[in-house]
Amino acid sequence: MTDLLDEIAALKKREDASILAHYYQDSEIQELADFTGDSLKLARAATQVQSRTIVFCGVHFMAETAKILNREKRVLLPDLQAGCSLADSCPARQLDRYQEMLRANDHRFQTVAYINTTAAVKALSDWIVTSGNAEDVIRRVPPDQEILFVPDRHLGQYLQEVTGRKMILWNGSCMVHEIFSVGDLLALKRTLPQALTIAHPECPANVREHSDFVGGTEAMIRYVAARPDPTDFLVATEANMLWQLQSQVPRHRYHPVPGITCACNKCPHMARNTLEKLRDCLRDGTPEIGWQPEFDQAKEVLQRSLLN
Ligand code: SF4
Image (tube, rainbow, N blue to C red; front, top):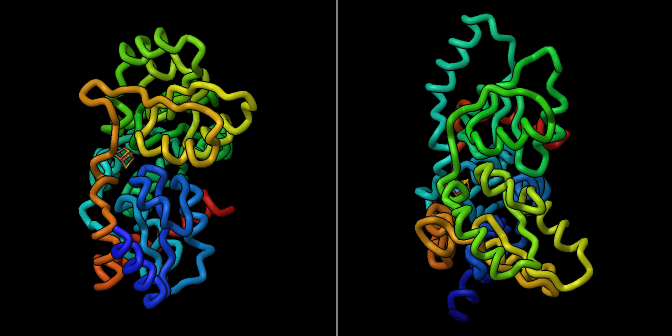
């Protein structure tokens, strides 16, 4: 293990590379990263790195976003197969047809896409949101326009509740957040009646309803940090987030909310990235995210939504 870490450090220097890691990566990857964060924080960090190369430890749409915002930099993704069930649930061609149908039926609307989408979907959208900035961006959509929100129906429902804006919702979901078991959450609450529950807005309504706080991963960190006394938190999001909470705010105790099918709720796509693959991609300069024709339009939408 030490040899592998030394090798990565030497290659990082040789290749003039920075490592960006999502909060849902294994702790050993988060530990050696130059930047950790949620999608919004990492997209912003990607525009600030000085190095020639970015190694993005996350899933494909995130590495694609980093490339879109940094055309001149080389962006590597340790495993090109690291996808996302949410991004897969909204193919660009299907969205294009649906938008056409809405226009043909006299709907005046703007399309708001969650960042968990392909560049081709971003290029068809008016706005891109993350769980960290969604409420602010939704409030920027003119009130005389309808909102088509893609692809996460649970996040869309949550945003309808908090902003009061009615939306046309795409029927997508995250395979990790969708399977939290409300029954197991209630059982856990009975065991730890003093605990507070924090849930990601990608969770279904029945889990959100039983939560004391709903917010993206950065908002979760702020929420637990604001609580001075040691507290038990039941955490309904990807299991690796517990490591980040523990390392940033160690005075509390964190307990994962179990899923229906397993106790850990780890994202299998994120788990494709390993230290060995990180070393290999630095050594070989591949897999690399290449510039695609749709990136120009996606860049305009991303910059307007996330950076301004
Ligand atoms: S946790 Fe869900 S939304 Fe995030 S990358 Fe995995 S499948 Fe996609």
